[in-house]
Amino acid sequence: MSHELQKSTLRWGIIGTGLISSWFLSDMVAPRADATANHTIQAIGSSSEEKGRAFVQRLGGAATPSVYGSYDKVYADPEVDIVYIGIPHAFHKDACLKAISHGKHVLCEKPFTLNTKEAQEVFNAAKEKGVFVMEAMWTRFMPLTVQLLQLIHQDKVIGDVHRLFCDFGLAMDLDSLPATSRLKDPALGAGTLLDLGVYSLTWGLLGLDEGIASAALTPQVFSAQSISEGIDVATSVVLHYPQNGRQGILTSTMKTKSDPVFARIEGSKGTIFIEGIATSVPRRFTVVTNDAAAERQVYDAPAKVGKGFFYEADAVANDIFAGRVENATMPWDETLRVLALMDGIRARGVCQA
Ligand SMILES: NC(=O)C1=CN([C@@H]2O[C@H](COP(=O)(O)OP(=O)(O)OC[C@H]3O[C@@H](n4cnc5c(N)ncnc54)[C@H](OP(=O)(O)O)[C@@H]3O)[C@@H](O)[C@H]2O)C=CC1
Ligand SMILES: O=C1OC[C@@H](O)[C@H](O)[C@H]1O
Image (cartoon, rainbow, N blue to C red):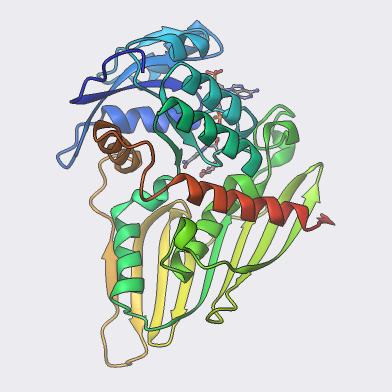
């Protein structure tokens, strides 16, 4: 690395000033009683300095970052420890590689890259440079997710898991969006699988099997995608585990909004219902056992301070302070595994919408 990392505070450079960067930044500057690391917003990189300044002003708060009218200046800023990449999917790989080449650590939004090959290139570069890199799959870091997985896999509150259903649907009026929107333009990596289905797939993988990365079981995958104007507007995936007969039915769509109860996990002793404002943000789950006399158990997320991006950010900071280049909850092999499944789903074939 080109500078000595200040051990007590992780200094973030954010590239892109769209929706996710605004959410991430506001979480980073919000005071929190339960923080396990300190963060500061050191720099913002935008396609224009004016846009970057308006972004900082709009968000207000305590952040007084350097504002640059280019991403390159963020990568080159010696005061920046880590680059947060909040730009369209198609640009993730290049942004990661540029940040890494300047010796920066990287937290890159989901999907990490467009495909496995790109991700492997980034991880190879990170390995060579000795920097930390992680896909920002924030849902995995939320305390409610961690608690849920503990109850399923260690405490076995619903016995043997049989099936898991998960949906992420948003009703998007694609006609009203400009052709350049990241949600519409195939060249930017648009489509439900990479944008929304990655969460349904994540819940399926985590709920049906306690192993991740190389410790995970390999499921058979069946899938169908509805393609319209070059992007998948709906994707359905069935995971089948021949090892134990478990099945996951995992869907994403741009046509309709998911029910607030976005997932259901059925086991030999009961069922768990997961709900939230989006499939990426679980706020509550309910355990209903087959024992008719038993009370249903409701588990809520901790009282809301921000959106919840600080859980992943704290984990990243603590890894970096400890000298680790990967995170145990979202290691490189896990990102590669999810991308490989999505590569296969897209290669498998499609129907016109
Ligand atoms: N974790 C989560 O819950 C969420 C994650 N995401 C992820 O975050 C990333 C960005 O999504 P989101 O913030 O919604 O996207 P937006 O369209 O709101 O913003 C993207 C930003 O990227 C920059 N950009 C660079 N090149 C382009 C281009 N050709 N077209 C459009 N924007 C460009 C722009 O910033 P500038 O002009 O300042 O450079 C723009 O504001 C994606 O990977 C997405 O999947 C998105 C929403 C939620
Ligand atoms: O990650 C996401 O979650 C929320 C959605 O609004 C967004 O399109 C997607 O990128």
